[in-house]
Amino acid sequence: MTAIGIALGLTQPFILGLALCSAAFNGLDRRTWLLAAALSGPFGLALTSALFFLYTRLTYPGHGFLYYAILESLLAAGGLLFLLRRRRSDNSSRALHTDRLPRGWVAVLAVALVAAVAISLGRFWTGVLANPDGRWDAWITWNLRARFIFLGGERWLDGFSRELMVGQTDYPLLVPISVARLWFYAGEASRLAPAVVAFLFTFSIMGAVGAALSAMRLPRQAVLAVFTLASAPALVEAGAMQFGDVPVAAFILGSLILYFVHASGRMPVQRGAAVLLGASLGAAAWTKPEGLSFLVCFLICWVFFEGVARKQRLDTFVHSSLRLAAGLLPFALCLVVFQRQLAGANRFFSDRDFLDVLGKLSDAERYAIVAGAFLKQAGLLGGWTFGAAPLVTVGLVFGIRRLSIAERKTVLAGAITLCLAAASYFLVYVISPGNPQTRMSVSLSRVVLQLYPALVFLVFFLQRWPLQPSSPTAGLPAAE
Image 1 (tube, one colour):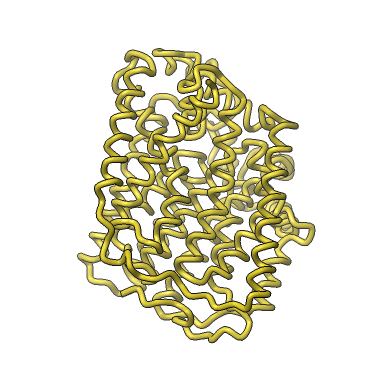
Image 2: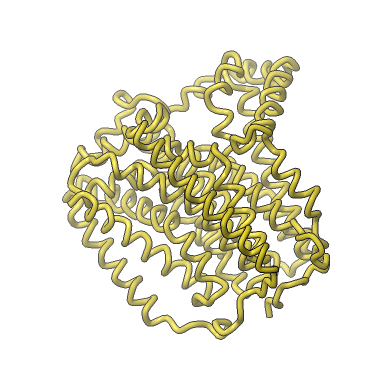
């Protein structure tokens, strides 16, 4: 019964996420349904967590989970009806990218991909069996709060007293609510639920990268990118330990992919993609503070590149920004309510003296310590023995294809956003209390992992296959 309840609890978010993608993409054709399927799990969990939080907050103390479950079921039924009645768009007949590889290459790539995914699956569930409650960050933050929600019943918010909570009391609730939802459906606090949530986020990252590159580039790039992610131990191990950094990585990746869909002109769904982009950014902020930092960095680049560099008409920029804001709004509302009414003070930055922060910002030794740790972490990027070597090798061996003007600006905006996010992480360590080395020793590898899938997507979006023409449109159908 536990497994059936968890399956039911996952079905409804998946339907809602798929319906949202279908509405935003103006129907699902053969170029978008794989991407929508990969994004629907994380987006569905984000939507249901926001819905659960807002509903229970508005009706508090309410009537427990039953009435919310009825509301969610009605919405899922509506989403399913929408999917069944939705006509395919006029683009549904467009063929997938032709990828004429020799059979030998096809066999090699297929075997390598299947082996890498199989090994990553084995590594994930082996890690879950060895640590069924996850590591420290999982059970002291995410699963502890999920238990407060599940066991608190109709008065679960009382459990978020700032005097009772331990750990990072300012962390948002996307992951805890997602886990607690499955426990409500299962009827017990099963260890399987947080593991399934972690599994969904971990492997949706691989699916999203593969689906996006297959739609915007060629299947060969998609296969190589998924192989890179599946064979990198850090992502799978962090997922198995149920760290919240993996969901953040999924939404950061989703944001970058959807921005490329919106801005590169490779797919005919640019308008709807802006709404999904806003939802992905909001979901990242609703997961961890680093997601909020990424949101700020992205909005800076959005204003510059969409509002200035592309030289769009003002009304075009305003309409795109309004669509982005529409997707962001539900999660922004959740964050405002959470921070004002429930979140505790950040134990690293509350009650800090301005002169103390200024002194740390002017301390050259702290910059040297943090920079050294970042460089060392770059040598371990993705958990590889040789760090960034696989991605650098891809760039050197395959080369970078020639980009269209729109793609150059899109790639530059994505790269600068990732650099700004990394710089914000850097500054946080510089101004953190005490010796920054102490905090970096337990968190830096996971913080860097948040940007790793997006970096892999960016590298393989740029990658050119040997002997492939370097034209920006080589091997690609027009977006029409």
